[in-house]
Image 1: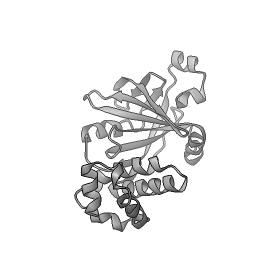
Image 2: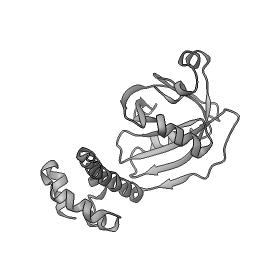
Image 3: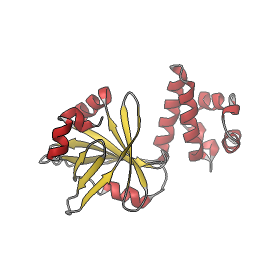
Image 4: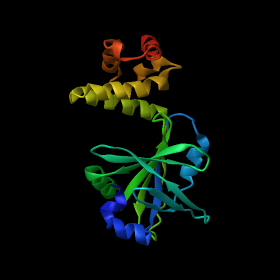
Length: 219
């Protein structure tokens, strides 16, 4: 169930085509993949958007209309994820906060909700928007984060997995991180909590494939 289902009756949302203003406030670019898709997503800043269970609609400021079919991918305690496809043929993730995550997003930005567009590869790019009424256009200072921030976030997520008894989360996040340091594995020592993180990986090499083990052994 998407954010607009939390704001209005789903049937009315579909029939009335309720649109909200998308205000871009953060870009995460861990690697320069699908840069054309990234530019498409960024161009939706200040566009009017409508999201339901099957469609992501966009009306841009330069009078372009997009209607992207989306399909459900996954849901956890904090977000729902759908998959769509841009006109260039590249698929994208559309992530919406739910529950406590939605409440925090609304409170933090004095907004009605939010959503994120990102590459299918979690080590690629993501752009984050908060939603306001259509006449409420916010002038935001867009925060840009690169690969270092993403690496640190993955380390922290991995260690939280260990602390809360979720070793599969450690494996998932560490596997996402390893390709990001493949060209310079020793850089990992520059990050917070890295020594314990590295020790756990080296003590559990059997859960990684050959390429991943080669990267770990070079750290």
